[in-house]
Image (cartoon, rainbow, N blue to C red):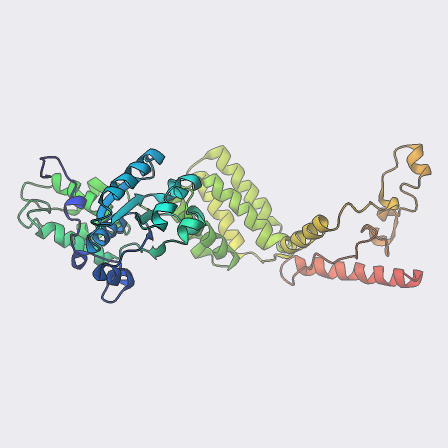
Length: 436
């Protein structure tokens, strides 16, 4: 309970009041670490705290403000606007002659550029020491002007041993903890709590508090009690943030790297976290063309069929079809030859201007077009030996002929490459005979 008699969650009651009580982030607050030195020296500076939920961003901001003897004001970018920012500035100006002001802005990534720019003059002249907290990569979500005035500290998900220490503190602290004299927690229940927390201290303590409320009268926390609170294991997955793109990147690179087991793991991580299976299926289509291509064209067919199966059947049958496609592509022969060729051809198409289609390649549906030479001397490939018009030119005049597509010596592209080399050799011979 709070001083006013209101309810305070366990996570808030156990919030550290000194840097010595802080759990985790030893790379930032351990002995001699940069943020600890800043707090202990009392020298303020603006910063961005970037890390997953429940890793101590708010607590570190409070400890920093206390360490530099500053007024601590908070805003949430979810609900705050320019009016709230101005009110904070007025509060800072009112005490500036006596002490500094630390403004903590939670979820700073939710502020747009103009809202972030509102802080700049006051950060610049020292009216505010700015601390922004974000779960998103500040390189993309915080504008450069504000980023250049702040140091970025990266927080990590808490390790199991860190979470275990928090559990011990909650069990032992009779004043701010669970309010029971050393309640018992079975080891398998502890392990489940730590797994379900997934590195998030706030989630851990919320689950622990709920389980304690439902525990037996003697305070005994069993595996069954904890399992009843948790339901299913929680897997962190942000459907649009960096976690999202990191995991799809890991899936793609596991497929490219011929590791079906890792590919399946990342697929399941995304699905377990709530990712739309059709999004994954679309990315699998991209993998089929980018990394396998003509080395095994069946990959694209299988990926398309997986999309169709999911659209028709949904979960879980459709997810299994996506998994089948992922495994097939992870073990298939690899080629990025089409991907590289497409990129090179696109670069030339965009840089070479509007080069005219050669006359012999133009369609001639009218007499005027025929009189102008459209289609003249075009060689119909099917009438040529092996259906190949040896020596014929298909590039526009003014553009040097390129060999964008270079098949690799894997899978079906071995045969494709051999056939192409034979045709190119015949082209070369035919042109030499013509003197071209």
